[in-house]
Image 1 (spheres, rainbow, N blue to C red):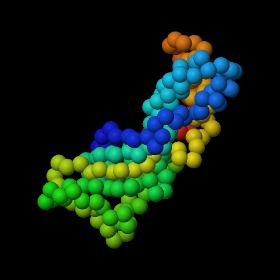
Image 2 (cartoon, one colour):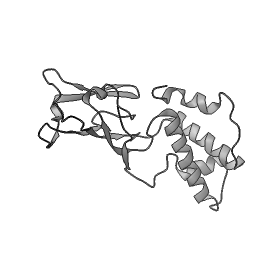
Image 3 (tube, rainbow, N blue to C red):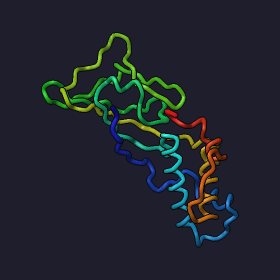
Image 4 (cartoon, helix red, strand yellow):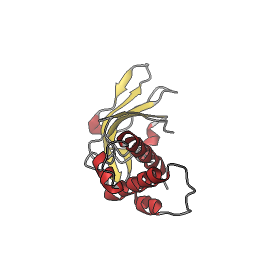
Length: 185
């Protein structure tokens, strides 16, 4: 079982969609609402991340799981080649150890990823009751896909213009834009 990851954003102040792009979309030509718009973009980003079970902004995660068997499916995505920085565990003697990087590989399948052993290697035996730790990079380092940006902009426009919670239809443009980016759905 995976536990909630501790995340450290590579650029904590960055927005998933830059404020100038948001203002163009909304036809806003003043700076009076810049703070509000930034907050709405952050809210929309968090909503998309929760809805799709993905990380949008580049960040380093410290994840923990119960055992190496959990590596069949990483809890966060997207991850890319070279994303795994370190795998740590507590050995039978109670010492913190690191799994050698040449003994495992990252297997990518769209938004899903797993860590697999290379031929000729076995996972070490961790101390009973101790968690395995994985340090990895997640998020879209090379830019967020167009459909996700469009969904965020759509949500920002809806919240900015409505300023109140509105009932959502069963299926919306928001859902249609994000359907290919939902993990585990």
